[in-house]
Amino acid sequence: MRPVWDGQTGPSGRDGPPTHCWHTGRICMKVRYHQSALREGRFSERGSVYSIVKNVEDLSRRLIRDPFNPQTSEDTVRILTDSFKWHHVNGYLICLGYTVLPDHYHLVFLLAKDRSLDEVMGGIGGFSAKGINRLNGWAGQFWQTGYRDRMVRDDEELENQMEYVWQNPAKAGFVNAPEDWPFTDIHPDWESPWV
Image (cartoon, rainbow, N blue to C red; front, top):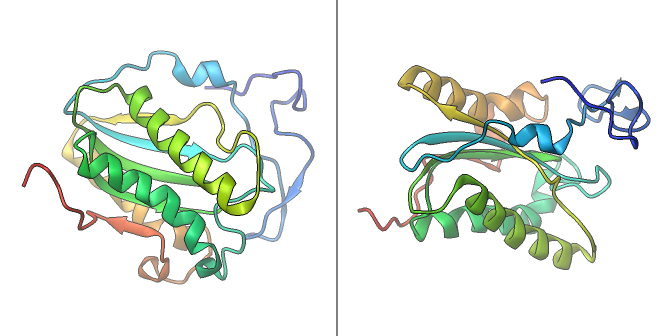
């Protein structure tokens, strides 16, 4: 999928002016895909596994303010992970793993009940946005409208997605080892209605 100019970002499809990247120390440009293009060809299939990436709308309002001291943002992250947990415990999804990074999260889950992927993502986004905005004294849209999803097709792909989620904070340079990142959980130990 190629970036599409939305009239507000630069003509190259990049999201506004260059910004300083906190983990590489270099100037970086963030690609912003046209939101409607993220929904092309999307369908929900109950019992399928999905890998999701969801980004914050405004980089000045991050999930984790200082990735080298992430515990200072524990309350903000807990609002998001509580939403994952609520959807899991109430049977809408089976959470296989997640990681929360400063400006986005990765979530891998099995779509369980009779709700579409968009309905589940809307529930997670709505609850977490209200709570995060309230906690931090912010207003307005917290999440980007779209999200990236991938239906996982086989065990090998699932293993690759889970490894990516696990390794992501270390690859980004926030920690030396994946187990040192406090906001990653693979197969969370949450009460489940299926047990």
